[in-house]
Image (cartoon, rainbow, N blue to C red; front, side, top):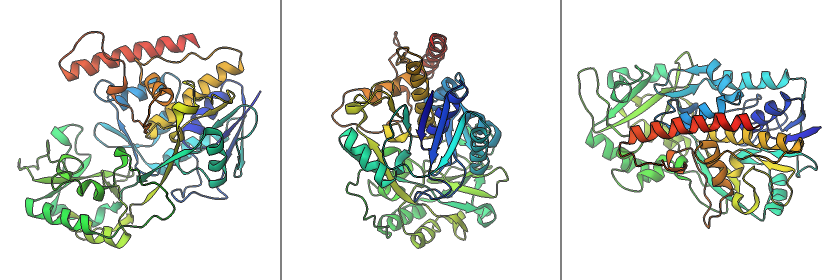
Length: 430
């Protein structure tokens, strides 16, 4: 049996290795290294574009952490790569991008059941197929998908700048994690009330890149550019990426607003501006972000960029097993399905592969129930809705607890324990 997988990002890589490790011959198609999308530059597979963070790790307080634990049950290659390449990030799982992608690429290329084909696919192939081309699907294939799925939707996705550590003014910032958790993994750049207000004014008025290639300007909340957030109100950033709550310097001082910087690599030579996804022109980024005292003389290793994300109207055309309603042997996985985030995309690749393997072997796919994050995401992409939007992992999409639990920590812990028990029972059915 042969399966074609189009796209070697997180979802495609997870799917390819899951199937290949079970004896299925996989042809994995990707345009790299012959060509790149506007957001990609690494020749390796599984490249991370927007951030180097895979979000929270604690399954009992963080839904994305819970999703990771569910994926570990199925041997996720993304989590294997993350463990090998992780960098300190408090309660989050952050990785060194290049090492992370190299690990995934090595695992793919050393697997004898996977044949890598470096070429652009312009239409959905015949036979058993997984389309995992991500948010920047090439134009010809995107048009073919639109024809099959009855249209497509676009929204904008933005990435944050990265600065060099040596250019940060450490006399005007301090190390520390929120509420003292996780050690000193973040550099905190405080602002006074006057500095914050001047910064917001400049941010709102700064010149932005004009994106002519997009017909729709729908901005997904999870990737909100900082300048768009600022325009929503004077204090909007103080309740979001510049939230000062839980942060004190070594003398116990609190601040009006605080920007956090997170390590981009193990050596700690590069830091990204947490939550500062942006579509400002490069010169404007340097001018405006330099108004933050600790970054007055910052050297930018990478400026923030904004790029197109494309996803299909999944509830109209996909089953809960991620297969097309019109062509049950064709599956979709990754952000193109309307799951949002690195971990969520990889999880959808696992799910598509699990269900395809069941079908290949003549069995009816079993869908994990919505007491699990994997099951809840499956329900989201296949559930009827008039305004389908991308979805992150969160406790709100899980089936509510059977009993009322007022305390949020206790409720989340209960939901997590129930989910892990359920996903393990689901695996036994396969």
